[in-house]
Length: 97
Image 1 (cartoon, rainbow, N blue to C red):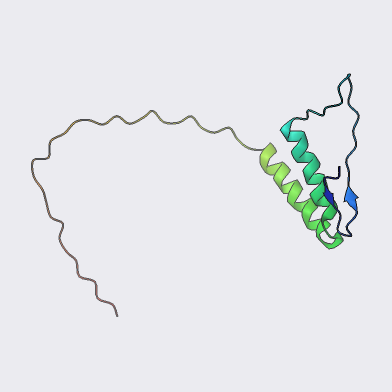
Image 2 (image 1 turned 120 degrees about the vertical axis):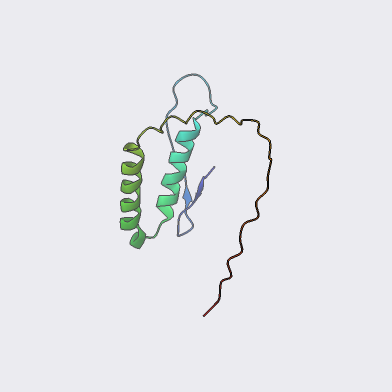
């Protein structure tokens, strides 16, 4: 069964060897996504390949050089309080020129 079509309508197939005695392909989701990316690149017109290569290189650099997320700050605890007085904020008129 094809996984897609090329720009000229030709079906796209991926073949791979599986070791073992089963005929059921159980691929990790990451592998399925990589195969899907191959199909998408195959459908990309030739004039978009240079841009795709640059974008993928930038993505690789971005994800490879990511710093670990800093630890979250300790949660702020609320302190019970009693409102004893209300103050109304003064009104400052703004004129439009």
